[in-house]
Length: 385
Image 1 (cartoon, helix red, strand yellow):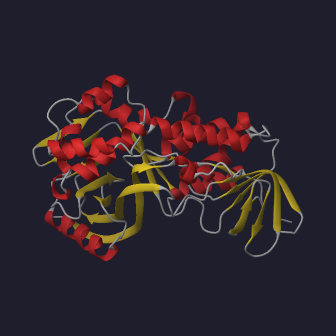
Image 2 (image 1 turned 180 degrees about the horizontal axis):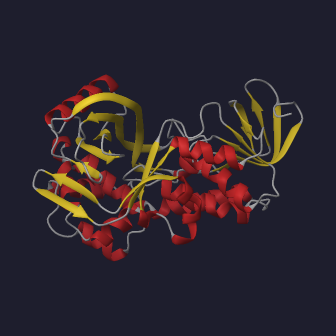
Image 3 (image 1 turned 60 degrees about the vertical axis):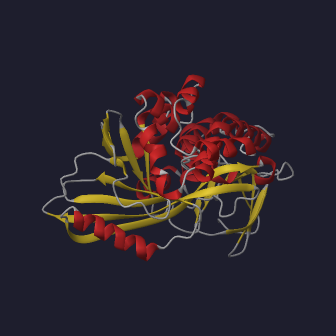
């Protein structure tokens, strides 16, 4: 039985969030010959909604996420004090419940272990309720609460699904509504219309600290809804989070070479440095696992890939340095307002983490939306490299 002192498997995934759940699904689909266990003390996927642009996911990897999509739209809007725009780009959302249902259906009974790992090693883990699970490979997907060696700004948010009596009138997502009062850094409201009367409203802040005042943000969401004349009959779900926006740091401190346990997801440092989002990287990693999971050097392969991803994120860390070191908190919205005047293709490649050299030059060209002296100082420091 699972949890006995001598239990064994081929692959033990620790953490049932986005990265761990997708990894379990990919291995179950492509490597049914393997005994895969998933260790997660709480609900798989948690209370989360993950959204992505169609261009974030390569066509060869879409098989993994397509069954999980619960909402999709052909376009989205952005709103700023001096600029509004509609972009015709596919946008989709996955819920934690959809991920949980898929994982429970894919893995055999008893292969999801509702427990916490109190010790994780390359070939075994110890469970909080007692027992040892040995494996050919342990894959650590527990996310991260501490980011050793990193200097970060923060993107923090509270999102609530509101039932609006008589309908809300929002036809497609509003990815950024920065016409809301600018508080605590760059503030924007994010809207996802799930149906005619259900609207997910997320109040988001790019700020200097990671402290999340959930009660205050709930009040601001209520004020935003009231200002639009929405008659809110109920709140059906709430989620919150704090994501790192990496400015500078040392990958070798984030994932020391001496740590030979395989990692994926945020724990491996594979997320977009400017936005904090990890879904595109989580999909790419999960899709690659079936082809490399037999390798004895799997931890080294994953660490090398994470290090390469870290190097590719250098440009995005530079943008984070400009945002947090050069822009006044109340004027940070101007950085995004200018960005959303650029071409749709450039915007899509930015969010996917695949900006070309031409894209980077275009983003940096022209008069900067921050004080020039502070911009030069932010770039001169060069620790974002």
